[in-house]
Image 1 (cartoon, rainbow, N blue to C red):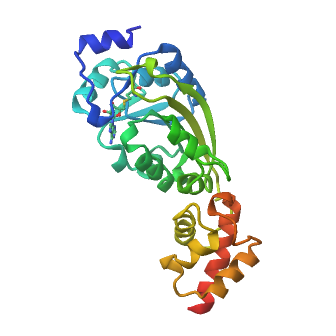
Image 2 (image 1 turned 60 degrees about the vertical axis):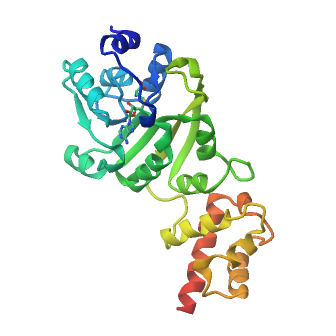
Image 3 (image 1 turned 30 degrees about the vertical axis):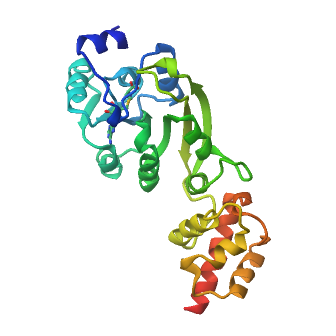
Length: 285
Ligand code: SAH
């Protein structure tokens, strides 16, 4: 087997920082990430940011079909050459943020498993892109900056719990798998990375009457973290049609003390509160 170091040399690859290129060179970590995805011959897999294919080659041995998405044209060329023997691999040249998961899922009549050591500069947009396509994605195993993973898997009351934690966990079961130190990459990043795994639920964790309102509520509740929830809500533009007593009443119906801070609410509590606020808004309208 060709090692990552040999490929780097053979093609004289100069990592492009703007594209978040930090290539995995540690074989043990490459193996661990590919194995964590629990991929079988039945699976349709999409890899985000395949680079020159270190993970790709490993996943290809397990998957039924693998679509390796890469934006850098030089790397796309290398992938095509290095993986020419793997008939189950298709290299897709383009931006993952424009990648249409729903269309691919339809084409192959299968839900998708997503894997990737993803560029840190676009980690948040990637997560929201996956969320937008959650109905066709089974699960995702991703390596991100450690702090970002901690935010996405965080629980109420923790400092790292915030808007992304709630928005993602309404739709997915999240867990952190393991940390990966800088020495496992070339070039070595300044930060520690972590691998996380998410499984999208068939239905949201809480039956939401209005997903957009839920989204707004979560953002407003964390607008000023140190403020009481009731005060953050009274200042929220999307609730301006409601009077103080309507907000107080929705909080009471949801069984939530308005003196609490937003950061203490569970995902389900946010869900319940958004439904009761929806009720108040409908009654007003
Ligand atoms: N998976 C490889 C490469 C990780 S580095 C490895 O583990 O070694 C991240 C990769 O994502 C780079 O190859 C970079 O070119 C690619 N990339 C950056 N932005 C992208 C985008 N918007 N869409 C697809 N790939 C992207």
